[in-house]
Image (cartoon, rainbow, N blue to C red; front, side, top):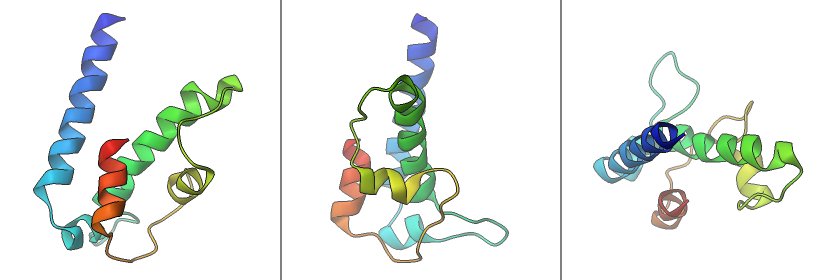
Length: 93
């Protein structure tokens, strides 16, 4: 189990590095042939983890319903350039 937590931590560290490496415009860019962008992918990872670990166990998540609705499976980015506050929200989660 210790190894799983170590891998999970490395994943989150890589995600934070990505958030810190790109401009808001770059985070919002959807490459040709894809449906989503870097920011959406990172936020989706956070939402998916919360839904698997908490919601599926009938426990409350640590995310707002709006955040979950925006980044859950089946959603796509709306095309706007994220604000510094939106990026920071994802970074803090």
